[in-house]
Image (cartoon, rainbow, N blue to C red; front, side, top):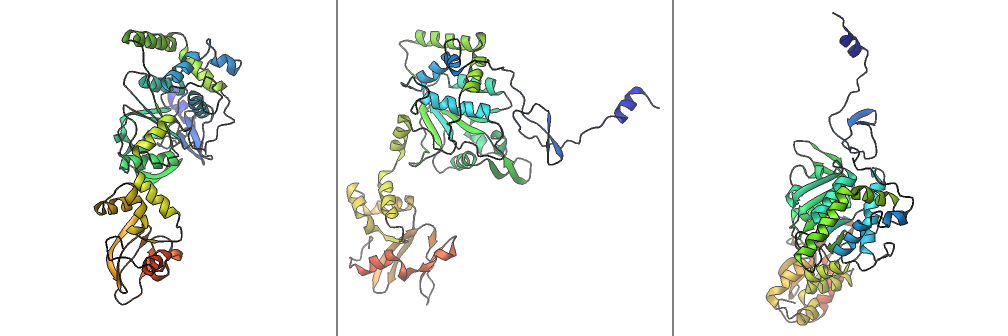
Length: 407
């Protein structure tokens, strides 16, 4: 029997929606059309409405977002008050935040390949900073996870399907699965991965990573181009002074439209000079971290290897200056050579001499009975060569050396 409800349904056009949410910040519609199909839009407009400042000067003033700016300068130990100065740490961070606040879609452009690592004592506002991003950018734009374990479980792509991915307490080791995930997710806007309970497919991962920890990172490599690293704490004269400071700061945020002022600052900040392809600002704290984790003997070995791009083969005696400089005994040679990217071929007889060759790890040296030895490139066969033609092999065989481990 016809009734008003049945008639309404009959004459209403329903959009077929594919139940696979897509992240489209800036689009207010609940569904987005992609190649003729409709998908739910996982982004929601932030409840925080930015203050409309007439100029960047007003946005940075005491009646604007000055408390936020001063807080960053204090916690980052930034002594450069001019936010537009290229060495201003607070200025750099604000510009990077502003870039993500103003630029939304990275499906046809590169997302900034920069991650942030802030470390320091507890109770100095790292959690407040997360809450600021969550409020200003909106809950749908910020994914906050308790630790790095979420970066390697079955739903790791979900962590990066927003604007910011925040790890609340980080403890990652160099070479770990977590670190490899960070490199992949930081360096790419799309990844091929298998989401939990889903098939292997291509995923859009526009989020930039922010990591918090009480300790400096130990996974950073000497030539790192991904991380902005800085302490995030300070010293107060007393606990009472600290309590008073944070009471005033959080009151400004919650009761004096501080969040709206920060959003207005990000909206008013000029981002035309942001170079997303450039490495992050180098800080003294990052230099210290790199110095702390750098294995200097390995770095020196790599430098020697780099000076001989034509060579595949090396012997331990090629690095005698390193062994002497750092007083490294024979038993320690192999560990340093492997860390430097060389593979051990073992000690064998070549002609009338015994030699222990180390080769670049992109090569292999199969020992085939009754045939000439070949250095096989693992990927590019055009780079495969006869062992006897390698300059490193020729050098080692031409110079008379004692029959030793290094020879």
